[in-house]
Image (cartoon, rainbow over all chains, first blue to last red; front, side, top):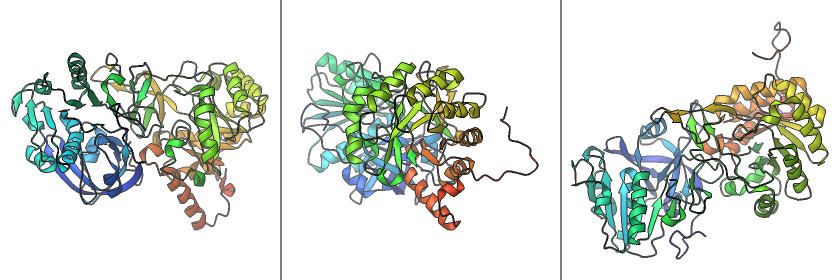
Length: 270
Length: 299
């Protein structure tokens, strides 16, 4: 069993493929929806940092859509799986149009989760990279623990409703926007505390992850990042989603990640 | 029915998701003599009606396959038939892989990949009549197991290459491999795929695969595995009627891991509903249209 932190191995459940009903969909920011699916066995087995492949399947005549990876954003007591969906292109736009009562195919839980080993944790999220930290913060809050949640967006219009974040996680994120239209002005990395020794977790655009890796190196901080690459299958068969490992190997984001300790990756090639 | 090479890993990846022993079998990811690291990302992208990939035949090599992958296939599959997809830079490479595997248990036969568009020289054998004939004849001398040649569509007439395979001693054909393609990232003004070009698969190539199957059926008597764009039983039946006695499910498994199971069930339902006792009765049972003269290749 893989361990993302070099500590206690995290047990992972085998993935399942389920046709799941969309229970609710909520427009939460520009081009961004919060969707909850009825999928008890994936909800029960998921760990923060893991993801699902979400697609419409093959049943619709003429439908053709490769599933897209989404971090598990939350799991509810009734077997709900929440995802944070930002419509970037054709596939995500199609998924955003799903209506309550329609079904989608969920494959999961997939990938290597965060391995927090009970450490103090600082989560650094850019954009929809917030999703796994909603799940993680909610889990930690349920266990009576707190995490630091630092969340950055380009501007106020892109910010995921802070009230909903608070209701899901029992945490208030520290918000940054690049133009200062909400929260503090600046990049999310401005919220990093050089004096802290907490375990850093990062999820978001590649430039953010690169900046986090540089910060972690400079300050001797442990860092785990969730990476994304174009993905075909999510289970390691297509070998499409590779990133360059520190040992020069191509490593598969879907099964060797998507969470990696920063030192396992070649940051010069990412 | 088989899961197609490159879409099912080495079987183990799908073990938790579908009953491999109930669908027929699988064709492994390509095995080369030496390990191959594969191409830089992006390696895959969705395209209209399909996807493009340029994985670059990443694989653990002959010895890695025997040590790491074959034991699982041997120990966990009982009814599923396994074909090992073999690739090489040279005829010597192909022969070394087949000879190196032939004494091992855990698989039925070989699918020879003379048609991968994503590596340098990948289609050389598949597009050169003499080279293909020599390669098949050479491999025939290396094994008595079923020897299936996976054809490339990138030739003037697939039928000619099908006949060459038969004459050189092949036992069967897979028709068809991916089509070369390219996707341009207009924001960066560069190819989206790290390898620049890749192979296009998925429903977009269904009619081309059916056509290739039909052409191969016209020119040779070898059993044909139909492959390319199959999503459901109706698609599979097109291949069967055009001349395929088996079908392979590829890209559809990415969209729905249960696609092969659904095709399998759909074929059974079709046979029951239409009073078809044996699928073999439908193989190549395409009705010819009167007054159209002899079939000629397109183009």
